[in-house]
Length: 78
Image 1 (tube, helix red, strand yellow):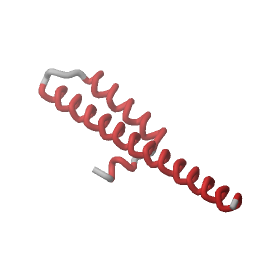
Image 2 (cartoon, helix red, strand yellow; image 1 turned 135 degrees about the vertical axis):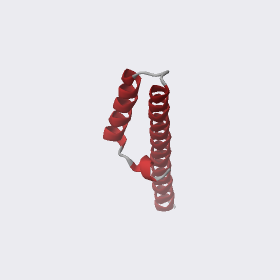
Image 3 (cartoon, helix red, strand yellow; image 1 turned 180 degrees about the horizontal axis):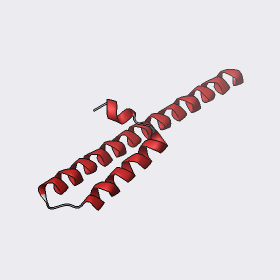
Image 4 (tube, rainbow, N blue to C red; image 1 turned 90 degrees about the horizontal axis):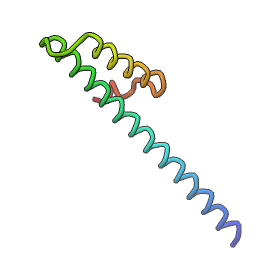
């Protein structure tokens, strides 16, 4: 009986770890999408004359940092 409980506990812990990993991936994708949206808004504002090149560069730098940490898979899932 103890062996069964140990296996069940191990499987539950593995499932919990996989769930946490998936949540982390989803959060990173959402953050990447938000940064991409902010870059687009900054670029649009710059082109319309109400934004600045510095805002575009700041948004681009934030996006590049996110890609360096989490990859660019969110770019293909849109």
